[in-house]
Image 1 (cartoon, rainbow, N blue to C red):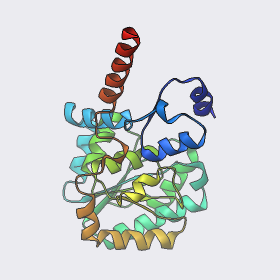
Image 2 (tube, one colour):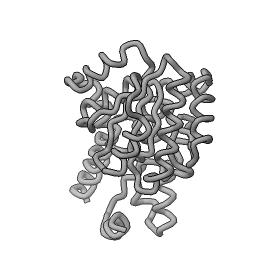
Image 3 (tube, rainbow, N blue to C red):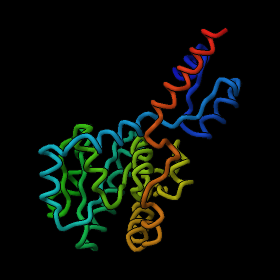
Length: 242
């Protein structure tokens, strides 16, 4: 709602994707006011990865998972809490038990519902690491080190797509359909059996991992801020000339 209210006041709309442009057009925004630039969060992702070093939290994770492929897990959405979350986490535990080469790293959201589900389904396993939420820097390095991502986060769908990390989305639908269309993300649905099957299929799907390698610029290529600033500078020059 706030985005649409602000949209009525805006002179320019910097859309992250072509789908976003289509949404604005459907709302009656003039196409001449829309510029597809990507999302500046991808700029922040690439800059953080290239300009910072992992901190103590990330180094600790690396030590614990040195001989494993990391499955990075995050889940917290309200619609997943309760029985659905328990089923997802149970499927992850069973997957790890069947794959001795895999470790799960789960920065647990502070929500009591998430903490309870994580403790009930994932505690007391040597290759499942329940850790406190990380700061952005360390999380970017953790995401960059992951072999596969399992999450219900919208933002992580964008980041995983940009980094080329195969991702199972803990939902039946997503507001980032571009991630699925790119072939990097797959919807996991709501049930234990759906996720368990997808995890096993994904782990054996070398072609999927090869496809994901290198990522997709569908949400941005790391130059969004530059594109926006150059566009606005051009507009200001036109205004002065007029």
